Structure formats: structure tokens, C-alpha cells
Length: 336
Image 1 (cartoon, rainbow, N blue to C red):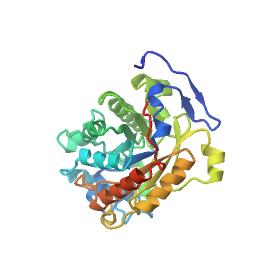
Image 2 (image 1 turned 30 degrees about the horizontal axis):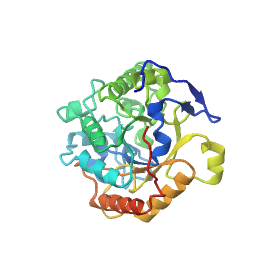
Image 3 (image 1 turned 135 degrees about the horizontal axis):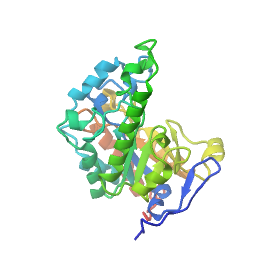
Image 4 (image 1 turned 90 degrees about the vertical axis):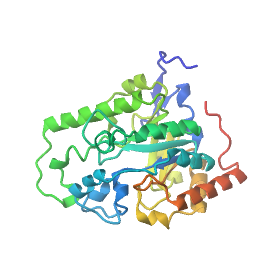
């Protein structure tokens, strides 16, 4: 039993990554394999990548649209087929040991009924708590609970953004708006870390230090793993694979994670229904990443109804069968 009143000493690695000796955090470097779910209102469209699909100059989304059209998708977002228990069960059978859900991406839409801001399920979905349902499913299936949160706030700051060229000569964001954005982010992070019981990992996609100190986060969740980057517990690489040079210069001695896509964009697009990476490709990634002492966080995006493509379940089953027959790829672990 961990005494939450004890402050566990933390030090820094040579690259600025925090090293924690809290016993509740020690599962992370041993986990090996996790599920990343980028999900939000963009999935309703089927051709827009999450958040970045409203940037005029973004090249990696099947299409782009003006922000007004993008934000209007919140009115259509009704994931009546969202079954996180089914998804997390499939992840567990694939050998995954933790999961991370985008509770709020850069587009600012929060997947829970937040008391902060005006762009969340409390406003648009009669208070349905998609985050709470996900957390419950993680625990039911023995999956470590990870919550992704993006501090950047495209929605609140929309009147002052150019959105990749849709608008020109925007005025700088007033300080009062910056303070408002900070209040929303600080309040929402607090909600995520106090509403749902023990959270195993918080995955920030942006400068979280503007809102909380390291010590304040640990006071809310003493054994939590904080990611990512400097002053956090782990480093990460995205859409690339580790090399010997990268490992020696950046990753060695740190907890770290490789984030890669099973699908074609971070968020769901229609192409995911018929084209995903092969199980063999993912297994090769997993072997390589584990060889360099990292975790592979594999992204799959649910659609606008909350459902994973059938092909994604096929891939997860194929991966799980390979790992079951080749246990050296992902040995049994002590979660402590």
C-alpha cells in the first residue's frame, strides 16, 4: 500500500526527463505495448483529420475545411455505437497493457461534461461522459488508464487564428483571452485528475507547465506517469522508428514511447475501413521498439458513431495471436 503522503524523490536524466521512483509509476517501462485512440468530432465527417483538418495548408488530411464547418460537427457527434468495453477487451487480447484516449484534442472539444468552457459533451450531448465510460472499460479489462489532454485551444482562440491561411492579418490574442484559455485548461486538467479515481498516465500534447507545476500534478495523483518531454516522465517519437543514433543521443536512459498509426491519419477517416497497416508491420515495429527499451503506442481512431473499423479488430486479433505464439516479443510482466 502506497502512502500518498510520502513525497517520492525525483531526479532528471541527462536530457531533462524526470525520473520517478514512485512504486505506482514503475509499470510504464515494462508495459511495452499500448492503444492510442485519437477521437473527436472530426470523425463524423470521415475525411478530416482530427483538429488539423481545419488548417487550410495541412497536407495530410483527405480534405480540409474552414473552422466554422469543422466546429459545427459537434452538433452531429452522437456516438451511439461507442462500446469501450469491446475495444479495450480487443486491445487486451492483442497484448496491449495500457491505453490513452484523447479527452480533448487541439480542436478543444472535451469528451466529458466539463464545467469549464462551452465546447464539450455537457453542451452538445446532454452530459454524456465518454471519458468516464472509457475509464470504466479500462479497469474492467485490466488496462492501465491513460488520458491525453491538449492545452492548445483552437475553439476559444478561433477569432484570433489564421487557421493555416483561411484568414489573414488576425490581431494578436488579447491577454484577457489568454487568461480565459488558461482557466479552462487548468480547470479541465483538474477535473480529469479528480473525477475518475486513480489515473495511471496523463499524456500532454503541449506545454502543460503553463497550468500546473510538476509537484501540483503529483499532489492530485501521486503515482501518475506524466508525459511527455522535458520535465515529464517519458519522451516520445511520432510516426518514425528508433535508430541507433536516436537511441544513443536522445532516448537511452529514459522511459520513452513510439507513437505510430495503424490507420492512415491520427483521427478516423473512411480509408481506415479498407486500408490499415498489416499485423506483420506492427509486430516488426514492436520488436524494434522493445529492443531499444521503449513502448509502442499504436493509434486507432473510432468513427463518428464510436465504432472501430472491422478491419482494426481483425488486425488486433492477428497481432494478439502472434504474441501469444511468440511470447518473447512481449514477455509476461509484473505490473507493480
